[in-house]
Length: 288
Image 1 (cartoon, one colour):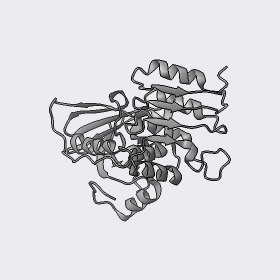
Image 2 (cartoon, helix red, strand yellow):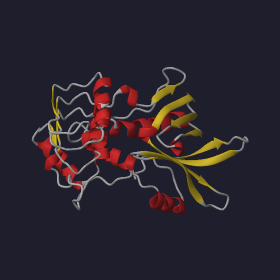
Image 3 (tube, rainbow, N blue to C red):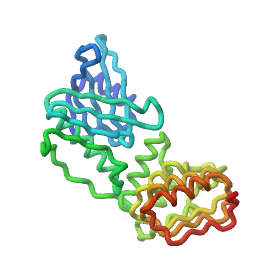
Image 4 (cartoon, rainbow, N blue to C red):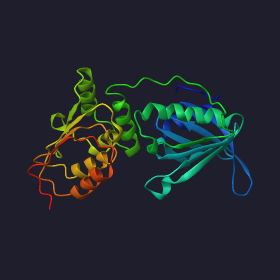
C-alpha cells in the first residue's frame, strides 16, 4: 500500500486485502449525507485505477457500495476545501453514479490523490477524454505532486494495463514483452502478427479490446500491422482506435478476409479530423 494511509482496524485491512483488486494510494474516512439527511461514514479508497466507497454497518460489517474506474470519471467538483463530488458515467447504467465526500480537506486531499492516479494512466490523453475538474473558489490550490515519468513507449504500457483493468482482463505477458522490446530499440511499428496469441485458437490468445483501446491516445507508435484472419473483432477494434488516434501514419490490414466492422472503420476515419494516416493497405478484404 502506498500514498496517504489512514489508521485502519485489522478487520478493515483484511476487507480491503480480500475485496479491493487494486493498489490503494489514498484512504480516508469521510462523511456522506443521504437523501433523508442522515450522516453516514464512508471509507474512500483511491487506487491506481479505481475509486471505492466502502460503508460499515453498526455491527461492523463492511461493504463496497460504489466502485468506479477512473476512465469512467466524468466530472470532479469541489465547492470548498471540505467537500468533493465525483461523477461517474459509463456504458452500463450501473456505471453512472456519484460519490460525495465531506470532511476536513476532503475537497483538497481526495481530489489531489485522484488527479495523481489519473496522471499515471492518461499519458497523451486528449482533453475531451479527461474528466472536467471544477475547483472553487477559482484558484484554490490542491496538493502538489511530482508527475511520474512515462514508462515504456511514452507511457503506452501503463495505459494498456489500465485498459485491461477497465475491461477486467489480465494483461497479456506477451503483449507487455512486445511493447518493452519495441521501446528498447525505438521501433515504432506495432505488428500484431509477431505477438504470440494473436491467433484466436492459440492457448495464449490475448484480447484486442484493451490493447487497441490503449492505442486511442498513443503518442509512440506510428505504424500498425495486422493480417490475422481469425480475429473477427479486429476491424471494429481498429475503428474504435482510429476514432481517436492522431499519431499513426501507416495502417496495414491487408488479407484479413474479415467482413464485419468496415462501416464503423470508414466512419472513424471520416469523423476523426486529427488522424494522421498517409498510407493504408486494405487489399484483399471483403468490404461489401
